[in-house]
Image (tube, rainbow, N blue to C red; front, top):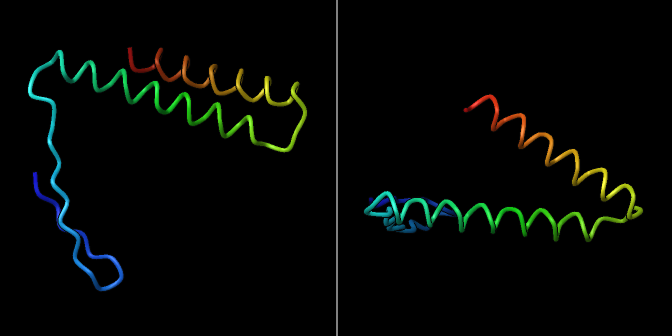
Amino acid sequence: MNVHRKKGGVTIKIIVYYPETQEKQTMFDECMAKFHAEYVAQYIEKLNCSLNQKLELIDAVAQTILKDAEKNA
């Protein structure tokens, strides 16, 4: 799929390749989930708050993910 985006008066051509098989899609989904989890963990780690507050935030994020997964199951 070709996508053309205009940014600041400059057109940027973006080419997107989708996984060709279900196995590759599953691998991609797992990689993206890991990336997102690591990003969130690093973001929380940098917050200027106590360790206990960070743990509570991580727990809240996990609970939200579990609830969304239950809704979509």
